[in-house]
Length: 298
Image (cartoon, rainbow, N blue to C red; front, side, top):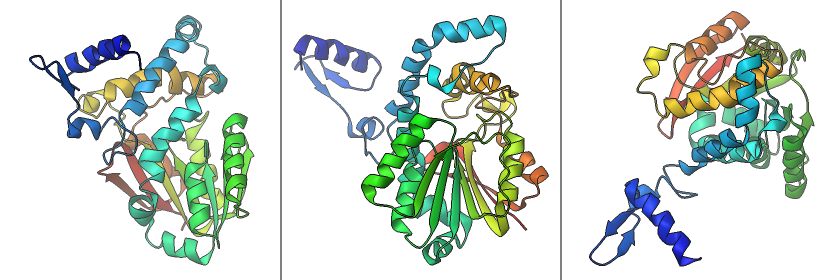
């Protein structure tokens, strides 16, 4: 690397108290505990993944400022690299701990997956979680739906490369989704609050489950009440992302624009009204920003 650029970058990191600087020896050191939050594959997760949203905000600034005046919305295609960033995020919060922490939340789901069941991931993005499950559970059959064709193309290429015959991806708008009693398990990872009509989707996913089927839902774990989020992890960033992405994306589909911080209370009430039984709400140590719901069709 060019030394002058690295030197100036290091000045940023030192004044941000991320890198330590010994002036006497002109020596820079990255403490291990800081590296654990800022490098790929670190046990605490890479917080730099979320920093990439700042670049997206800049890229869509003019479009969003216009929306402030018109009340219009945006489309997924307006956001460069969005699915790449969300895939990296999901890799840390979902795919990485999927088998040790996430799936065990749903009771005997792992055993049922081993035996062989039908599974839908609604709003699957690039499909990292499904790719991992399809490989681990060859007796089960997996389907991933997502609105964005570019994300589905990436996911399908991954399935082909891995030779997974038990996995299928389809570009599909879930507005008006109405499959009935088709799946034994449904998942959605950080996908519901962006929908045109989140409540209608949750209702439809309830209908898509067979009796006794389980719905595993991850979404942002903030409260619906602003005053409850003053100390919520990265609340300002989440509201900023909501302002430039999640709210206008929903409005652009003709939706209500509930936003990123729609609130776990809102999600839980929608699950209840949809007819789900035995609703459980969990938080996980590796994922302080999200809430995990487990709900069943009676």
